[in-house]
Length: 352
Image 1: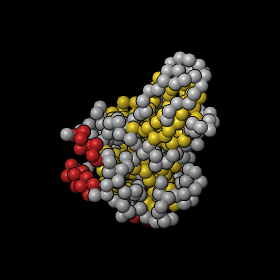
Image 2: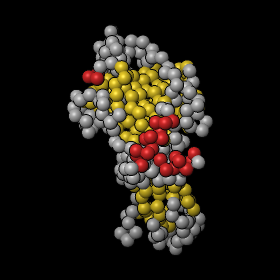
Image 3: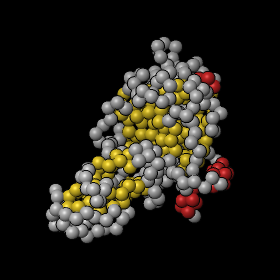
Image 4: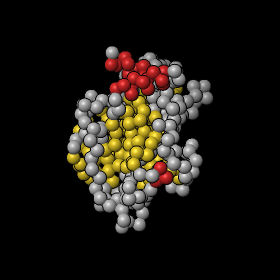
């Protein structure tokens, strides 16, 4: 029953909304009654989506996020949490600014985000240096803090653990949390946005949830920082994403091919752990490989043009390509995201 209810929910489309963040991120669950109410409201919309994304680009410049699509400034002044177009990691668009103030801004958004595992929470942050160490919030799932001494800590139950990563104020960083609601553990990945790592290797693995009774996300929250001695204590957040992609799967049937003859369409699909299609929130590069050195891929069967990397477009959940091989055998073709994002790659054996 639990799984059936969730499968229904994954077909609902949350409205695209503004989010706020800060030098600390925390995640938690709202009351069960809120979940049921939001399911009933959302079902009227009848659309299909499985990913929550906020880029802040649709908001007015220097507008408060308070009161926008279920977001609230829970602490501090509403004008301390505003969208800005002069500080983004790409050089265009907008980000969310949490202004340093003696009463630090605390913002949150309540919504039904889902419970499938893995659940990924990702965002870009340009952190500032605060004046003191943040405390771990109680009754939450997980938290990450950019400490006033330039270190990055993640919650491990009721205590902070050093991730080993450090940061410089006013530089952009990418933070990824991979949550497992079955084991109530999570991994965290941190890297400079301008120089991503070649392999997707966690900085810390198997960290304990702060509250191990929580099994879904119903709220996202972020804290700002304040320092009386630092020259800058403004934090910026961009590109927040909550998604449930577990793997890439080849959903078309295995094929037997003639030598050097194109295959029928091969379909690769993004899926969650329930084998449900998942929507790409941006263009995603996929790498195509074969164990045969005579194998080739193309997006067009009739006008063949060999490719090794293809693009699954934003708002799509699958892509079609073709394969042919000049050598007899049983090659295995694989499809994986490029660069590596930690998803399971697809594989399928063909016969030539």
